[in-house]
Image: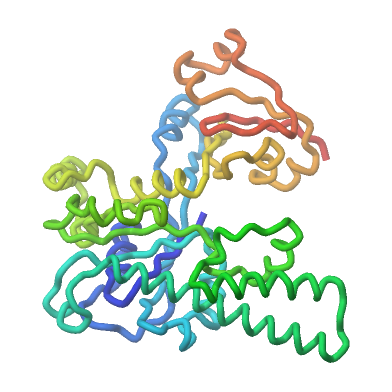
Length: 360
């Protein structure tokens, strides 16, 4: 899974990035000229992996991970002027989800240039930019299609694409994102190559100062039904990553009511809101967590591990994390009848442990 951090200039995206990743990328009250994104891969420190590793004592323990990408800040009219273009746009399109960072802190220098924090106005501005970026792409494509049709290049596929793009343009012109429009499987295939940014799952990261943290219930409630929100005390949590002693960190976190690290809260939130779950493979060589979407099957899980496993899939041996921990061993799981064989269509559940039988 990869998550792109986007937001207006000085929203504190890089501060959030540092808090999540433990990196020390430059943060400043002033606008920098840096346009290339910051990127880091962080482990999802699932305690279930830790417990399974303690049980199996493998040579290698591998946690699931998330790639976090911190994009350059947007300004008003950004889409119109092509900030989402070229290499940056290509990278934005590869993200699985976008996290919109909103400023909820005061700073004399930032306030003088950008005004006092107004997350409600900022979220409207950013969602408008995403829609505008897609509107430009869709309208240009529609122009090309119509030009081709006038030159006699009419085909059933091109005619179908024209109708689909017309629907998208109408929706975008109404100020609505691509996400939410009902499309057939064929229509989705026709537009899949465009990777419209407003079609991506989006959630909000509210970047609060210490004195504002936990006091924005009214604003968060105002977004109910539009966007899911997770709140961070960005600067405070970035500084926490410099404290090596876990007990000392927890004392500071307790002071303002933070129960878990920034990355733990983000991954829990992202998995829940974006529809991801974890399954595990275990053994003396390796204990590993894998990420798939809710509703995916044993065949999908096999393909996540390796394409050969999916190609030669026979059966999946399945038992649960809870059962093996509660009963103390795989042997006990089998004796209690909790060990089973499942076929390709079995829907994998969060916490399942799989061993795939295959032949190629």
